[in-house]
Amino acid sequence: MSDYVVEMKSIVKNFGTVQAVKNGNFTLKKGEIHSLIGENGAGKSTMMKMLYGMYGFDAGEVKVKGETLTHITPKLAIEKGVGMVHQEFMLVNELTVLENIILGFEPQKGMTIDFDAARANVQKYIDQYGMDIQMHKRINQISVGEAQRVEIIKILTRGADIIILDEPTAVLTPQESRRLFEILGNLRRDGKSVVFISHKLDEVMEISDRISVMRQGNYVGTVDKKATSPKELAKMMIGREVFLNIERKATEVGDVVLKVENLWTSGEKEISKIRGVDLEVRAGEIVGVAGIDGNGQSEFIEAITGLRKVEKGRIILDGKDITNFSPKKVRKSGLAHVPEDRNIRGLNRSMSIRDNLVAVQIDEAPFSKGILLNDKAIMEYANDLSEKFDIRPRKPEMITQSLSGGNAQKIVVAREVAIGGKLLVASQPTRGVDIGAIESIRSILEKVKEQGLGVLLVSADLEELLSLSDRIVVMYEGRISGRMDAAEANEDNLGLLMMGGRNASKGGEAS
Ligand SMILES: Nc1ncnc2c1ncn2[C@@H]1O[C@H](COP(=O)(O)OP(=O)(O)OP(=O)(O)O)[C@@H](O)[C@H]1O
Ligand SMILES: [Mg+2]
Image (cartoon, rainbow, N blue to C red; front, side, top):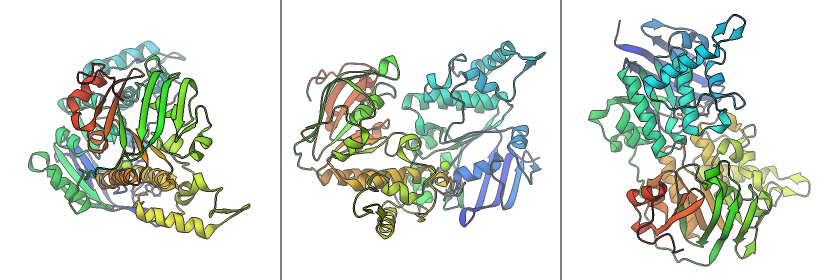
């Protein structure tokens, strides 16, 4: 038998007229961590979904542990030891962690489910791989990082030794990513094989044994981690060099466009209640909000954008009090918003690219004339934005459901940036997008600022905050634990404030 536990050769997969994979190759060795990288829409998820039996393949050959499989169903994949954690989690919110893990595979004792046996079995994996999860909690009570560990344990209990993780770190904080990497290391130590899909080259360089690259449905090549560099990988992915360090122009800072005064709101959790936040954003500046997920950043943005009730305090946008306005009225007052979760608030997944692009302006000229819609204007607008923001494929009629993750994100950014206004609130704007798109989204934010908008940028990515922001504030337990000019900020002093430490330089006073 060969060294490989997976061999995929000359794979072809079409969805109607879309050629998702034209020539896919991938091999996985036993006991290795193999990263699969490539631009948005390159075909990474599709390749792995074929291995997991979610999609059939139109041509090519797939071998798992030396055995050729012509027709893979998820059931067969699981039998062969293949497990996949998807880009979008598939856990049932209303059930507990334990119930989710055993769903469909419940151990029986007579006529009833043997929860004691199930618990003991799950505990075994928790101990073996150092995964901390709380079995009795419901899914909607746990963090994203924990939900991901639940997904991993779930496939391990089904006997998986080939483990596919589709962009697992896109939703994690740096600290949670660290923990995931420890777990992946433990899995490798136990002889399991891991496929790791990611857009973050530094992570890929850290965790992988080998790295494979895809571009526009084609296999580009496989390299040993030890023999490559982020620069080479970026070039393999997009065929040119990438510049992530946006040139920052000194812009004239103008009037205050957003003024938040002593803001208080409820929180999803106790620590994420907003407790007396003051903040100003001026025209022509980018203010970054740093913090470990769950310290109130989401609640803060929800309050500003009209999605969460303000209990005390005021929000002034361009001189006008918008406290507790509806989201629609906030928008009309000049606030554009790239929300943190594109699938819940950002996009209507059952609508086309075009309809999503015009969604927030559909009742305005030139898109509406009385009760009639101006199809020509809508189409022109959609085509124009698709071009400018490089939304792929260039098929404005396509339903967004089938778009790759990063392209879905580009639609939201395009729509919001295009409406202009006074303030752009961008939450995790580059989460899950490829480096080519990160480069373009970052330079778009820079341009928006140059045009005189204020930008409030929330990002879990410190490198992003440092490279874009003029000023940075750190949120900790619903308060601002520190503020500084970007010039004095670095990963160390921000990291300290994110953990609740004191801002040594300014004591968190200046604004
Ligand atoms: N179910 C589907 N129906 C139609 N087209 C699809 C479907 N799934 C994927 N595609 C298309 O196939 C191509 C490859 O998509 P895929 O999701 O595999 O990309 P990806 O490399 O995972 O990208 P990302 O990094 O953005 O997640 C894209 O053009 C996408 O629009
Ligand atoms: Mg994908």
